[in-house]
Length: 191
Image (cartoon, rainbow, N blue to C red):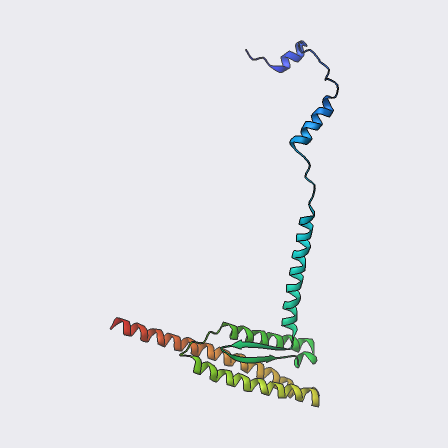
């Protein structure tokens, strides 16, 4: 029959016994054998350092590629230089405008995938972009030689804006060509 432990203590029927000598030492020894303290390994520290170095190198390389003024985008075996930096010499606000347009141009070019059917159209637009880039270089040179004028700064910004609009038109024309190709393929398949 089960009895309540509180009742046993009230009745003082529990006999108090002393623990044997070395009980605590034996208990700690058994505890150490069963659950040893894990020593921190130095491998974790080296892995953390190595990972930090890899991340730092990657960020440095990315920053170098982003900051380099004569970046180029390779699209369909054509290289389009993305020159910049002329407006950045004038003021930080104009540098932000220039960086925005150059990043947008770069983004639009990276999204475009010309096919065999659209390569002729794509190459035509790339020639126009190269012409605009040469004009941008000329305007940048004029800015450095003749000094800062509102007309030159406006022409530089308009050049960047026109290049971006040209890419938007190319994107729409490629979509139209792909859509007409798809509809002609569907018409041939249904007949």
